[in-house]
Image 1 (cartoon, rainbow, N blue to C red):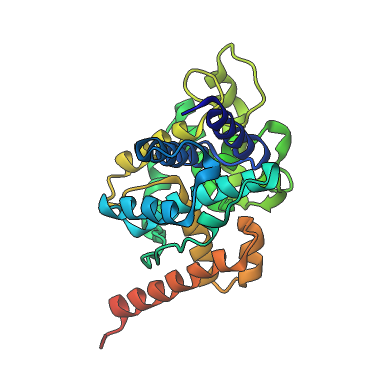
Image 2: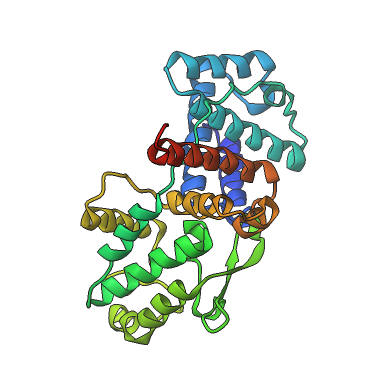
Length: 299
């Protein structure tokens, strides 16, 4: 790619990382999608971004379909490039009509995966132990389930962000939106035990103010959280796979199943749009159906 295109690409990636405050994973996806689009331009002999027309945008989408990618993946890639053009339009008045007019493929309806209470209990039991790592893992698991926060929000928590006495944590969400999320007695107890001496033992001689610490003493990263959760599932010997967002899904599903109103759950999750929260109503209906089918004598 030429120097101008490379400059625009790097500028936009810095924008989503620093100004939009997207997670490391999300920024990586944007980078991959935009680089793929720029490779498409080079292969098609399109010299500059200003030369893109609706026909080229459709051709790009067509190539994605030809590769047999899922509709969700194609939709994400189109959205990434559309956002890139929208940024360039706002900053440099580059026409973004080509991708603004391009339709997203309809996504498959997939309900968010979540843990049942019995599965969660096995995870908590698997964290029981006397090593500093065990106390950290339990505090991490309890806080994720108690608050429904994103992993990027968890790894950014500093000591000054958490008030264990009041049971409130301050988190910085997407777009640098700050919110306060409450947590209950189980998380409070787990954090107190972790903070008593396990955190300092894990830190060794490293100094920083991040709440969660890796085994080398540095701040725990998003990838590190995934490793921790994978290890917990392995120790619990349950069949379910785990990924960090599953605990967020579980938090929302359990609240709505117990009668919490959707607006409250929306605020706790930090969703800007209620439609993002509404998907959990479908999950709770499925939860009710499965409970009924498993327990009713004449189901």
